[in-house]
Image (cartoon, rainbow, N blue to C red; front, side):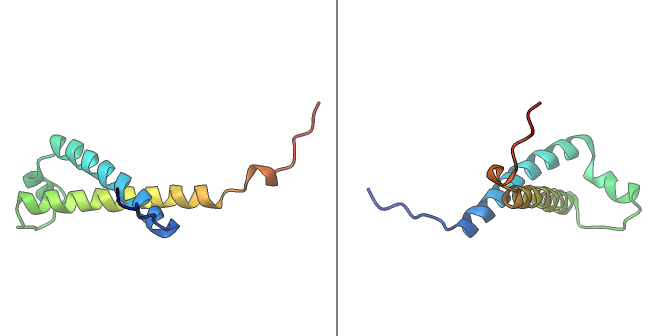
Length: 94
């Protein structure tokens, strides 16, 4: 078998943010557009858009992807910047 390529931490971090946010955006867009008709979305928001339903589906998916990626990125940042357990003093016994 061939040698497996190991990703450096930056590539792994990008994959850890992009892939779950892609899956979550797919689920979010699926649920959203199961309830909302894209042809009625423009008039409801008072937006004049003649791109068609496929363009609205695409824009909706990318909106959800950016939203989920921002959430995943914030979570990854919070995990990497947390203080380590050995930095905390032991709680007083009592």
